[in-house]
Image (cartoon, rainbow, N blue to C red; front, top):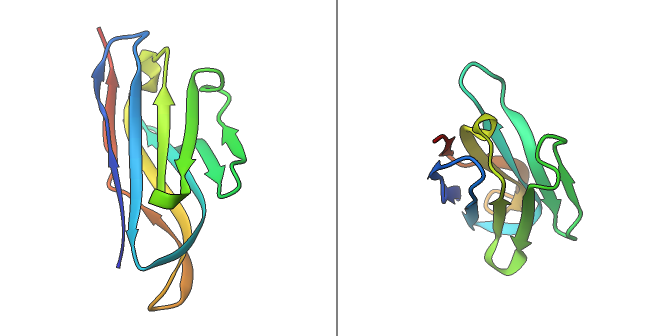
Length: 121
């Protein structure tokens, strides 16, 4: 079994900050990349940021300069530091992990259940 669990969402005022955390656990051999996606009401899920095992990062244009993704390979964890939050950042944020698991030996992308981020005054 593999589990991906997010935490850290909540309500924050515009201009504020939040830090999301995500950890993968279970029969994991290695994780190739981890990332954050978000889905706002009535919109498609979109990529926010991703990071490889070597530390290479990618960001959506809408969050560049405001969000920072980081990773702790020893803990199979990824974090998203969100600063200067805007109302349009309101969404459910999902974490995913592209990993190779054991028993069975296979590669796949696993998703968390999501955590709500609401930016409002």
